[in-house]
Length: 188
Ligand SMILES: [Zn+2]
Image (cartoon, rainbow, N blue to C red; front, side, top):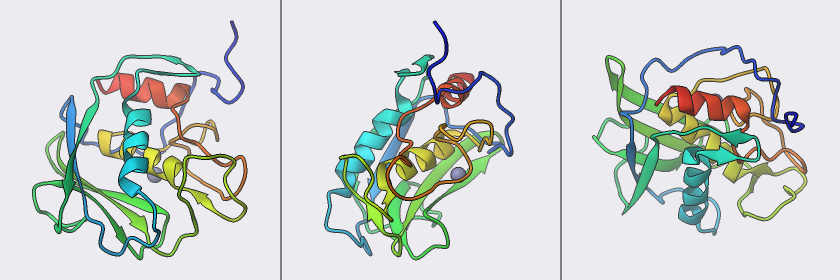
């Protein structure tokens, strides 16, 4: 059976790597709702993205990963601050999303994810992505995979870890393609 369209050709060149990787299994996440710009259940969407990120398989294949996650509730702690917990939050940033981390040697000690308050988000699970909107689930999946240790690739625009992201119908990249699957398996 051939590789599905959009799954990639099996070769990837990593543009950059996030030297530290996740500790091998569990990420505990907290959510800081301050500055959240949309009246939607961000936590529910983020949980969906977590499941996409840690899944052993997708329509592109099956590769085991040790990654797992747990949601620990809301917090007033800042995302992007050193505070000993992994926080998801909102800020006015210059991109759609950003992952920042603290590490000791090769081990990630803390990872935070911030989403942009000024972006026109497609903040729903339904598809297609609305015109001019950016798919929150896709950006969340991308930032979560950064937190586990994946860098970017330019080899396949359908990979979650492709370097560029657009708006509107057909731009969603929620579930892992071959490069994403290989990457997470490699981190085991
Ligand atoms: Zn990125």
